[in-house]
Length: 442
Ligand code: ATP
Ligand code: MG
Image 1 (cartoon, rainbow, N blue to C red):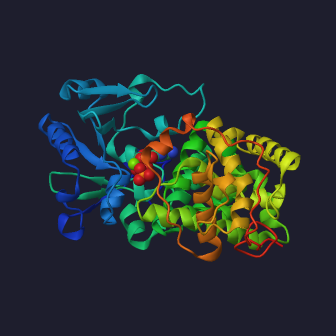
Image 2: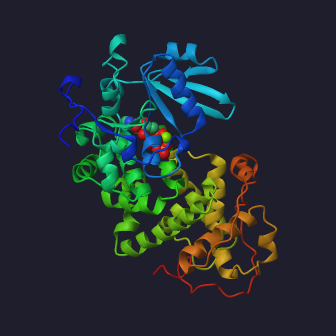
Image 3: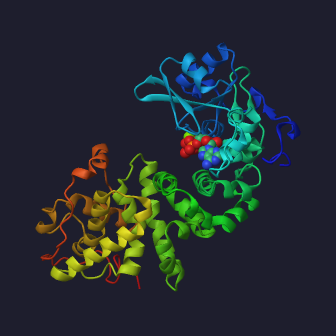
């Protein structure tokens, strides 16, 4: 759209497209009660206030939003006065959290000016009166057009400054403004574009796509913690397969996980890619049915193909000294590869255990006939569950697994798997042919 340009000033920008109530399906009934209370309270106090961001996008698409964010012209200090039970958080982008119950928070931000959001160098300190902006500036500083819509409660209209409604209708992910400039200012936007395309099965608009491919390496300039947060959302979000496809195609995957480059591009590249995608699809399937995998399980699925191709995992289970040495080498390779992602030590330990013990599961077949020595291990349950996930990926047999909430949070208290894993005596046949974990690796 011609007005989709963040470099112009407010005056140069055309009037927004306003979508009246009769022309959209967003109903107040689907909006969180507390979010509505905040909107009405702000209006009654004489302020402009809108529902913004992902909440409007999801409502428009008929999905249940994860959170309802509000933008207003009230400044943080004013918000604190209007909402007694609130607090200001964040240093640069001050945000007010309004508490309704201990577990119910609505986040309210004051309209930001685009320059504030895109400020990237420490030397570029903005004057205090430049910090807050107008609704139009707030819309133009947002990442994607589909995330830049406003919904207001006076006439229940959607206000669209950036062509977001048209993009939602056409299932298009487009960075607001000049994609190259917006990505250079904040490379994390590349991950956000790919996430929303994967999640909603949207296509990425060509100029946005070209900018991602061109500037993908700039992702490494972002703080590790931000990349980690975004990456974890993708891995856990229920669309990790579609995410990986786009990340692979754009090359972002190898910027995030450079150690994967060799085995996904060599002669075995296509087959390895396909296996990796199938493993991720298992986590998506479970997510869709309400089961969230623990972090070590997600990473084990993500890293299995690499561990086989680059570390030689698979085949006959190792014993004694060999098993010990293999575990140690795998663990140090994992530590090196995952260093930037700041994954807890306990998680890395369990993750190593899941991978190194998988060949035993394959060997004994996993039909409930586990060898006694394996059943006695502290990590037996995790290993057998991981095996079930892999089996689903390889053989299509639906994994019946359940993970208690506390299992995910108490990982620090779990005993790490023992390094020595020799002594197995099972004479059962492998579930699949030999060679690679499931016999598919050549
Ligand atoms: P989700 O459903 O995952 O919460 P979301 O779009 O709401 O998706 P949030 O991380 O909650 O994502 O961000 C809220 C809003 O803040 C976004 O919709 C977008 O408008 C804006 N935003 C977030 N990150 C950026 C960014 N890096 N650059 C510009 N705008 C951003
Ligand atoms: Mg959100």
